[in-house]
Image (cartoon, rainbow, N blue to C red):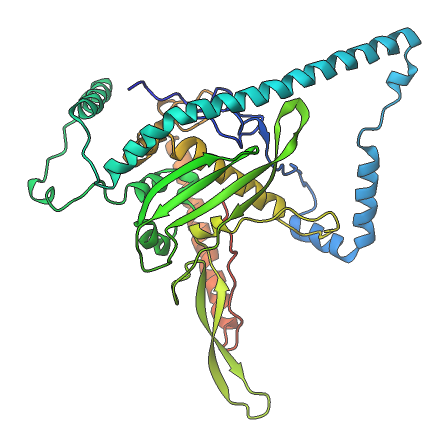
Length: 414
């Protein structure tokens, strides 16, 4: 088995995917344009103040949007000031560029077809992997020898490590590789941040994660589960769609994603939690406790993707673009990283190939000076004091009729 390719954004990714970004040169995926979030540097105006200002002045927002929109694509006047002969040459270059764009679109289409061709070759390997993971078959001697040879090479490269002691008594009772996909997902950083302790009990029943291409540009992620106490679905899927027309450079343009409905069993919905809330009767002054269902963080929110805003949505304070970008990136990580190299994520070996920086290696990082450590300790002491002050203030303000706090249905990712 060859050594995995380092996953640097400037290089080719470890696996092709139809939802790549122009920054990544993987097939259809990296040739798709992801929803972008503008990078805005705010120096003297913080987020809360800006949001408040715009909320109070909808006319100001409309004026700014109109002004920015009118500037897009406007000429500075330089081209128009050139002599006629030069402008003719500029027009000629534009004509050549149009021919280039046609070839780019053709290139992207052929790349997609090549991806599909090799995906057909990958599929039997994925199916073989699934049968071993779920205990239907055992690996052949050749497969085991090939895997052990790679392990020996890795150990030799690291200077030699002791082999873990085998526990003979437990082998007979174990079928396949328990919690294979849960372990692999928890080692994949972007997915691990979404998985809660409650989710783990359900994800232990995950027997396979796979994907398939659509007839149109796009793909479907498929999560297969065994019988469990949380939902009745055997299959939960999520589909990423791309627009029919190509974007600049022939790239596929991300359109939207759709997730299948999860049929939760009674009181087992992991995407919500139940809180107790006190209510007081205005007439009798009597109080009662009612149960309130509020959204909560869960990996299964992944199957309820955010929808792109409509053209007439002029909401000022919205995080829809950020949520779309996060959702897009998670799908890409599952398709490009998790599915093709699941065993490397299960063992944790894939972590060493995650991007640490442009040219950074783990050994490139040196310990900080003791003076810096002392400063960090002083900062931590100050932070702890501030936290105690906040806790004391919160205790003073608490009362029995306080409103329950709602958590965002979508997990945030750093």
